[in-house]
Image (cartoon, rainbow over all chains, first blue to last red; front, side):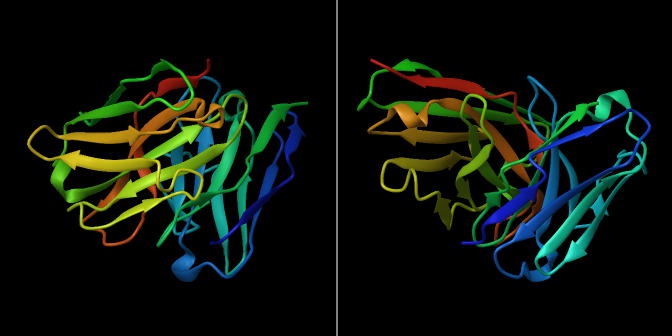
Length: 107
Length: 123
């Protein structure tokens, strides 16, 4: 089973600044079967990206996903107040595993 | 409008059983793989169980294997999670979620989520 390690655990950023979140897999992720989710407090998760970089409908273009193999990145170019949340990466395929999450908090 | 509504959560003693339901609407239930994902208090997400669109295959996390079963009733557009031999560590909010793509014969990303139902295992 693929283990996903996200870093950092917490990212303190000021509104308007850039946030870069990392997700590293314990082995190569086939077909870039990696997704990113956002979870705001008290809400269900929301799918942001799949196949590492395919944006879901309506997602602002300040969000971008990239990477392949074992290293993946979620970038938020200019943080808006609604972007402060917890972000999870997920591998999907024969099994599904999540990373432990990165909390993006207001600095 | 696509919607998933979980029910069946509550407080249960260790060792007892509970069945969660997820009523779906707004899409062709029989063509999508479905999932149960849980989140313990203050913790991250854990994929608990997955069932393919036609029910022909299922996946369970090691933490629940042999204790939980997942099933679906196409006539009722409803997903179920039968949880037996419950433990304190099963305490969590349980989310129902839909795979993004139809007709998948493998796991996929999840694009529609319910609001969750809370399960508390305590004596």
